[in-house]
Amino acid sequence: MLRRTASLSPSIGKCSPLSPAGKAPTLSCLSSGSCSQERKATCAPNPCKHRHPFDLHHIGPSHDPSALDISQDDAAIRITNLNKWYGDFHVLRGIDLTVRQGERIVIAGPSGSGKSTLIRCINRLETHQKGQIVVDGIELTSDVKNIGKVRSEVGMCFQHFNLFPHMSILENCILAPMSVRGHSRKEAEEIALHFLEKVKIADQATKYPGQLSGGQQQRVAIARSLCMKPRAMLFDEPTSALDPETIKEVLDTMIALAEDGMTMICVTHEMGFARQVADRVIFMDKGVIVEENAPEAFFARPQHERTKLFLSQIFGH
Image (cartoon, rainbow, N blue to C red; front, side, top):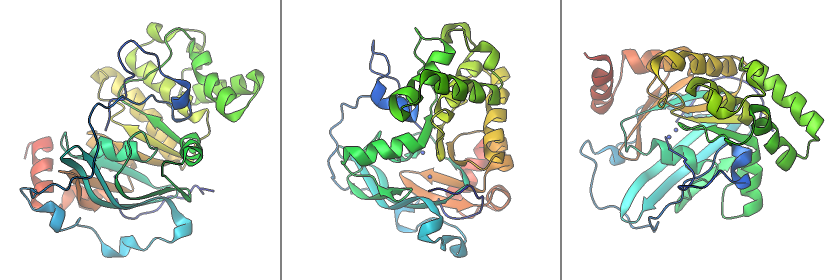
């Protein structure tokens, strides 16, 4: 069982989990608060023969070696030598990552760096061809029971909210607790109203998603995931589809979660959020972890030239 403690340690990805055209999200995705996107690509382990321009795959990430000392009992998520291919495209290359219980990690990097794919592998929305992923002591394989256990304990929020448009906000939030956890409707409604209040949107409980702004819908999506009382939350660029005026309300909700001790992995370009909340910032490019460090050191003293270039493009210096 995951304990809620915050601390520092080593490395983690973005997706757009829209359901296939014309289809609503399915019950199989409710426990993670998302629905996966159908993939047409054939995934076969076919090693890439091309080196990264910065030779990143061969140097390993820059970090403090002392941060790697994490006991098995203290690990919420442990990823070892993770590799994934889409056909001939080697999207994840030997990823090693351990996330402490209660740790808040922000993953940054350019588009196409593998951030979303990595984060989707953590609850098996994407399958990996090589390596090991262990979440709360459960290894993710093709075992359907293990996949179900992990998804019921790991909440996930994406760029798009994937709320059921024909259901009220309250009904969206009670469906998974009733279907997956086995709660009665009364119990599920009490839980839902508690978390809707937590994200400051309980007054919208009887409305439908189409009646809410994008920021409000994203807060509902977060509340829906919290209704499963997950032990960890994964966020994949939760503010990227929002207008600037509504980004703050979503970030404030995520900051409150972090302050409560939730284990969090967040893919985002909101560097202010990373500075304020993260225990560790990870930079990915070309399918590898290039650099990882505490926020202060990451932003003030980046070690790798690729990281320096990325930050200079973001901050304009």
